[in-house]
Length: 163
Image (cartoon, rainbow, N blue to C red):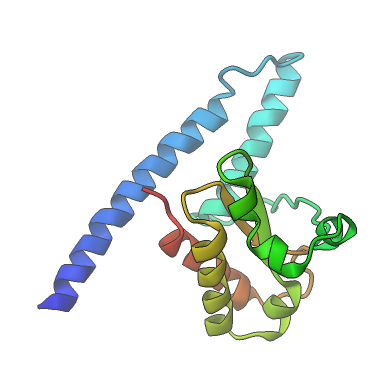
């Protein structure tokens, strides 16, 4: 009985999240409020935004996955921060900045799906509290196990969705 109720609640939450996500993507894809230099720039923006949407949602295979170069922990270390400082940066920046990171490439290459999920949960619980956090890799995804990347994305979509 309890399992069925949880599954029903999860289905309701999932539908709500999908609707909100579609609304956010529609607003983003519209380009409203952006002053494009010319029609070609607007078309390029919408095409690239569509690629990112496809990569995030994984509803259909994207034509290609846009990659944002990641510098890993180097900027924080160069600025004199420790790994602890970086993990708890949210306490410092509060709601004035968005932070992103930092699922280590080593974990995605050599870890298990369960280890990836545990790490993602810790990141979301620590840095994702109250929003302003983007779960991402620490340094790209070269040689990462596809199952681990899938686990990271699916777990973050299910566990990290804001209401």
